[in-house]
Amino acid sequence: MKKRTLAALAAGLFLFGACGAPKASDNSSSEDAKTIKIGGNFELSGATAAYGEAENEGAKLAVEQINKDGGIDGKKIEYISKDNKSDNNEAASVAANLTTKDNVVAIVGPATSGATKATLPNLSKAKVPAVTPSATDDAITVQNGKVQDYIYRACFQDSFQGIVLAKYATDNLKAEKAVILGDNSSDYAIGLTKAFKKTYKGKIVAEENFTSGDKDFQAMLTKIKGKDFDVIYIPGYYTEAGLIIKQAREMGIDQPIIGADGFGDEKLVETAGASNVSNVYYTGHFSTKAPATDKVEPFVKAFEAKYGAQPSSFNALAYDAVYMIKQAIEDQGKATPAAINKGLAELKDFEGVTGKITMDDEHNPVKSAVVLGLTDGKESSAETVNP
Image (cartoon, rainbow, N blue to C red; front, side, top):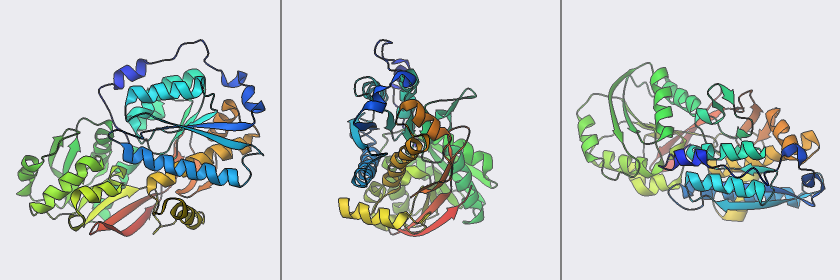
């Protein structure tokens, strides 16, 4: 998933100075260190804090379990988590600090795509790899036809989500006519809309746009209410999607509503009201109702014991991201940035709680997706979609 702010362009220009920028191949201290330093670059405050906080929880649980089991090759993980405040400039600054001041050998995060894009220059400068749990923009790992060397995902990308949702609308919901309500201020929504429109076999009878931060969608919904359609597609985040669902249902618009992983937070239901959240479907990376591997049940139990709640997709993705780094270190026999980067690029048949992962040549995981259905605000169905 991704979030774009007005600082996005400036973030791309923010590079730390050449002095003190460690080279992965020169960073022998990482081999001699008593601990393995892994950084967390997360949205712990600000507009998308729900995602960042959930991912930080998942990462901390993974670190705790790994250390309890003896660490990695006898070394404990030292986890250094910092708040990027849901701001792209800050995310770039955090990446610089983690790599130059804290000397981490790998980073987990950020959660959103705009923030993740902003970190790429600093990751490349330091030659330190990062695994984003949930940044889904296709252009993160490949830009202008070139694979970005130091960024990987634990999640599938937007084009895959848009394709899955278009097929789900046609094949499962039998929707021949669709309405799209998209956030035209978000790269996330724009990418999802593009993929959906390219794949959807039915007719798009209306397309309305809103901007991140909008609260009143009555005018937009009034425009579509009298139209003949079978499904509403909302590519966006829970913040606006929850309000749209609430206002649509209160206006008597009861057609199925579909969306992507930006729906995947309990605040969607809190905002919309549980009674309004029925016949709602979205792509997810994880569900206890559709366990991808045998690791799901132990993970759920451990998460519930630590946090007193059921884990979300974002908890699970960050948990997997830490274990992907662990696997990369073990496969290469070294905990240096260069070794971890090579290990992540060559990751094959890694069994995570969100599925079995093999990294493709563009640093995207080949894995399955889950389409989750909600009734009265609760998960009522989960259907696995294989790539």
